[in-house]
Image 1 (cartoon, rainbow, N blue to C red):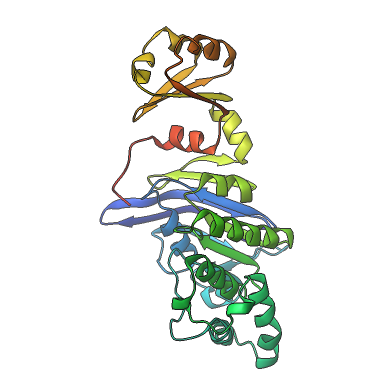
Image 2: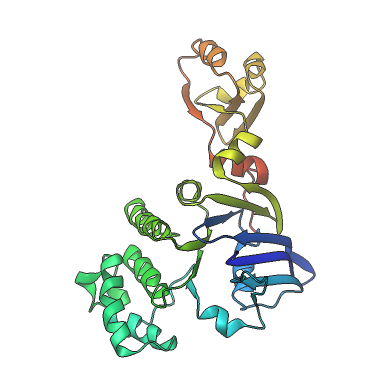
Amino acid sequence: MLLLDIRDLVKSYGGTRVVDGVSLAIAPGECLGVIGPNGAGKTTTIRLALGLSAPDSGQIRFFARADGTALEMPRDALAIKQRLGVVSQFDSLDPDFSCVENLFVFGRYFGLGRAALAERVPRLLDFAALAHNADARPAELSGGMRRRLSLARALINDPDLLLLDEPTTGLDPQARHLMWERLQMLLAQGKSILLTTHFMDEAERLCQRLLVIDRGRKIAEGAPRALIAEHLEPEVVELYGSGALALARSPLADHAERVETSGETVFFYTRHARALLRALEAYPQLRTLHRPANLEDLFLKLTGRKIRDDG
C-alpha cells in the first residue's frame, strides 16, 4: 500500500519545465525527504500534490487500497485533503486568533465537533509545547513557537500523511532541534511524512529515504547512508589557511581521489586519509579538518557548489 504515488509528473511555466518527469512514492510510516537547490522544483512538486497547481502531465494518486484503487488529484481533491496535514514554508496562522482559537477554527474546517476539538486541542498544545501560551496570538510567539503551532494545526484532523515544506526554515538551532524532536515523535507513532528541506542534518536525522532533484529532474534516490556510500569517497580532509589553495594542484592531490575548492577551503575526498594527513604535517600553518563524508558533500557533488539565483 502507498499513501502517495506520483508518476512522471511534469509542470512548465513560461516554457521552462520546473518539474520534469518526477516520480516518488511514500509507504505507511515512512519519512521521504526531498532535497535540491533553490529552483529545483521541490515546492512546485508539493503544490502539484496538493492540487494548488495543475500538472501538464503525470499522475498523482493517494491512499492506494488493496484492490489497486486510489484517490486521484485533482479529481478527488476534497477527499484527499481531509486526510492530509500540511505545513507550508511560510506561516498561514490567523493573526487575530489565539493559539487555541487557531486550532479550534481550523478543526471546524474538517467538520470536527466541539467535543472532539475539546479533547484534541489541549493534547496538541501539549505536543507543541505551547500549553502555557494557549491564549497568546501568533505575533506574541517566537518563530519556533509559530512553527510548532503550524504543526499542531496540521495534526488537528489526525492526518494519514503530512506534507512539510521546509518546516524549520528561519529557526535558530534550539528551535530547530525541538521541531525535530516533535517530528521524530510523530514518526515513532507511525505517521508518514513528505519533507522538503535545505538542512542536510535534518534530512539525515529524519528521513529513511531521500530524493535528490535538480532543475526539475530526479538525479538520485535512496537511503541517506547508502547514497553517501554510492556517490562519495568515505573520508574528507578540509584544508584552509594562507596558501591552502595552491596545494589543491600540488603533489598532495595524489593522495586523494577527488579535490574541490570552495572559497579559501580545499576539500580532499579520499578512501585512505592517513597518508594525506601525514603529508600535511609539513604545513603546520594550515588548519585541517578530517571527517567522514556527509549529506552536504553528496548534495554539493550532485548539484554543484555554485550559488544560484533562479529560485
